[in-house]
Length: 438
Ligand SMILES: Nc1nc2c(ncn2[C@@H]2O[C@H](COP(=O)(O)OP(=O)(O)OP(=O)(O)O)[C@@H](O)[C@H]2O)c(=O)[nH]1
Ligand SMILES: [Mg+2]
Figure 1 (tube, rainbow, N blue to C red):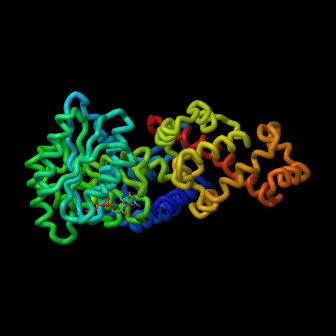
Figure 2 (cartoon, protein in one colour):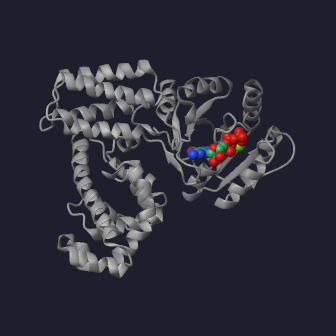
Figure 3 (cartoon, rainbow, N blue to C red):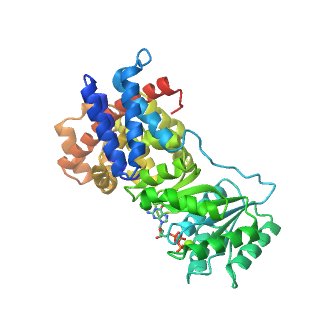
């Protein structure tokens, strides 16, 4: 939920460190929790209802045996947040490849339709669908060109033509159908203020192409307004699913997601950046566990698989007891293959509590660290306890860096190792409590 992550992660940490959860402390923690949600633009009444529920449950229910009250409280918060976002289900669909499936994208100007069209196309193309994109935005100059360029980048054909939007949409879809394309995605124009005109055009296009699903694209930065906006579109066209974009940059993402969920809207994808890989299937349990700093092993594993890394080794690092410098090195290598470090860190269990400020530096440090690690001996990587000042000096000279650099790297490694321990504990806890497979 955008910027809300930091404050929630800190709060979870605080709860887990409380020696004694009495009523007063609970009230105070719940209050902090409510504040974090309100800052994320979640509806106040909804926030209060959740707060009350957590307070009531923590004071009346007995935690399952072997579970502390602190752990139980974290679990209650986890559950309530999932509920807030519409429950445990994901709405992802796998269209039947024997029959062409048509998606119509609608939404206001600048909400991210064209970018999302390309992201979704890439998502399915990677999973061996034959995808076609139809550029039915005749309103904004250059709009067709924008989609054509994105299509080029991802190797997906784009139907571009002159004429009016309705004819383009209709012809594009039928041409792709004839060519045996499994999935056709129609990008349409947005309008800023003339909503009525926009909705009329959407209705006409929907009539012309008879889509299997209409996806509404909403910008997370509008916060709670996402609710009424989704409702307005749903009255005009049969909105099946919702894509919420720009969750990376918005502190109001929590408001947007919860507002949509509370109107019964099915969020299928979320956009988390401008890149064409910055699209995620919306899965509330993974989303929330990441938000709370419990780490999203599932999403991480998917990224790893996509980057064709050694999945088994990765899983061993996450679940294994030891975390050596060699594991750390493997991490760094994997991360540089997978893209943005700071984004990945939020998925890596236990590391999501590292403040985002630190992560920024980490991105810059990554290259230097790899050079330094090259100067470690194998023994030093596997048994970091042998490191002493003369070894550190040797490593600094060998890698052309300073002893402070080497020490900083060792310190970061130790931080990660400690957080791995915390994570193991969190995962074991959630497994025990929820039966949810992390
Ligand atoms: N940070 C971030 N930016 C995004 C995301 N999705 C889209 N954008 C950016 O938002 C801007 C508008 O995106 P478009 O895809 O062109 O939006 P559109 O809805 O097609 O706009 P119109 O065609 O003018 O109606 C672009 O600069 C995109 O890069 C996202 O998930 N995160
Ligand atoms: Mg567009």
